[in-house]
Image (cartoon, rainbow over all chains, first blue to last red; front, side):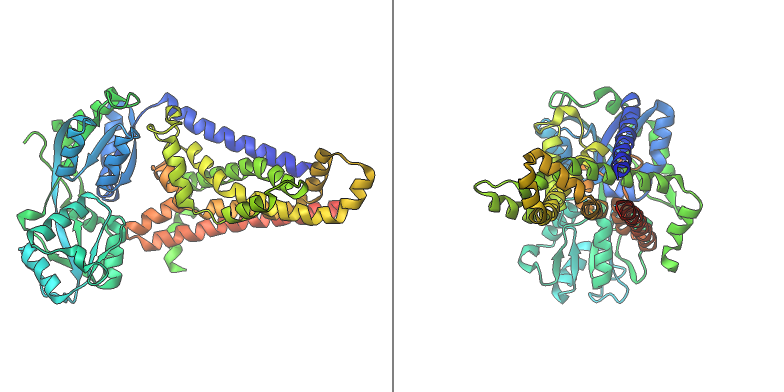
Length: 277
Length: 230
């Protein structure tokens, strides 16, 4: 029996050693932490971009993929070096609070309204998102909202405002706030036969599409801009300013912009670079 | 079973990403069990053997904390380890160490509460004998813990099961960083959110198989130990 305790002790030592090695190795390497959105990660953009960035600079990037609101809060607490998100108003608030000194446009794509193939609100093919939302409300067709202060959620709320519809009065009826990420919202909407606003990158790379379709696209109000900011080292001395700045510089450089433009899934370009424009 | 094929192909083909995730999951949960055992076993034993005012309340509290929601533990550890938190200067947030800490906090009450019950039952059996022999309090604790060791393996397994299965705490304090803090459960959550339900399901099968293997080893150990003790 003593052996069992010895084995347990050995196991503990091994585990501790392994964790030690993992962290020790990382302490020696150069790395930064980026708080970003689920769309940049789930669409595979980071999986494509970061190895190229590492090859050029030797910097490892750890990505925490959250909704935009949560990502900005993570950075506010000093737990990230760079934020890479998509909600311009929220980003400008972050700037104004002094958590970053400068914001750069990086790229854009667009939002699409996803709906069930039987299209209960009869909006398929529309290019007018506001009219479509009014129809959804008029029909009382189910609509799934992220409800998580993500960039997509903020964009969705702005669109309801454009349509002069007070969704908070309809919560629990046809308007269903789920408080989860993009993928979870798409899964839920599909299961409920509901409409949902999604960023195109996540939609294209989403694998559980059967029975869902794009109902509305191509309205210029569905524009989706991504921006990047280095967290202000004056606010959080733990921020790796030099390494973080090299990432910011890279994604807005002609080289980084070319990489972003070159990322495709099934022949479709997911993000359109527009730094410095 | 066809749904799990994608994941099994990863297992069979020795996908290094998957093996890294499995290894990290095991290392984190086993470390958390070891840490929680260091605290929980003596604590549970002490609770069983000592009498003090408010003891009943402490026992109820320990029992209740078995139901501690992982996401709450994750949040508390997150706020403690965040750069803006009291322990922020260690830079532990979004590391495997933070995940071990969160899981250890989560399962210490389970181990303490179950140990308390086991040792107390045993104590009723041995009380007269030990009193007659004049065994010191520390001696009683050591003897009873040692005597209950076979039952306590089940206690540790309950802790391991909880640690290996939870996703709420490790997601918050680990950040699900690819290749660094991604575990089986956070990977399953991620694949589900990407809509790759077959891969998520397959990873689920892999996780359950691993938990099964750990429990089978513990069972074997128990049989072996019982044979030795006779």
